[in-house]
Image (cartoon, rainbow, N blue to C red; front, side, top):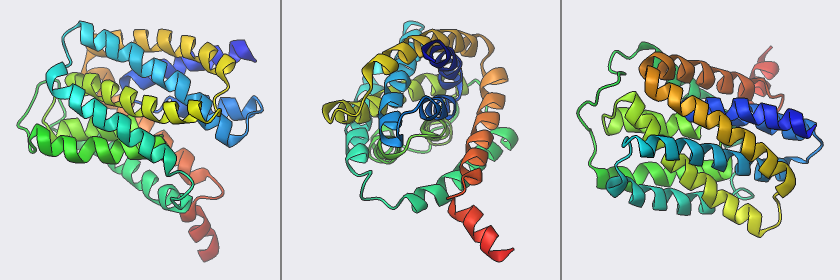
Length: 256
């Protein structure tokens, strides 16, 4: 079981480092391994944090991260991740289950159809200050509450609002994803929800997978990032919509 979780985490780290969505693989694996949902979500944050850290290190070494601008954004995302994890019990889950698949489908369509998505930077629509006061607050909070798709949301924001090319956007996404993941992990660890032996084994697999994925992303750029974002966002939306408890599925069942 441990070897299988490590192998799944390696694949998840690869996917996470390019397009996000690795939790689609690791969270069900933890549930199949016998963990209850609360411990599975908490433990999954360990491998998610290591995957993001691995990718951030690789992109940072290549000079693709503007640390001066991004450190404050990461600090905001970290705090927002803690706030999101604290709020899990208060936010109605059906709200997330209904809204998130629609947003993910929108992201998939944007990256599939928009001619503006390329490797080079474009004109920014927001200042760094305005971006910092909105995007890492909202997405970091969501990452702390739930998580799936957070990387795709960060990516979309960097491309559309700051005009970053896809490789540079991916690099900065990994840092913010790391920050919000670590924020929620801090709270889960403090409350004893993390199963550390499993989490650390999976973290090792994720770290290696993210190294492979981030190097490939830098080499191939939009040729791999764009299609993988479309596929991963679509699969995340489909998985959420197929959940028997999803409000869209329940509404369709009531109609037909």
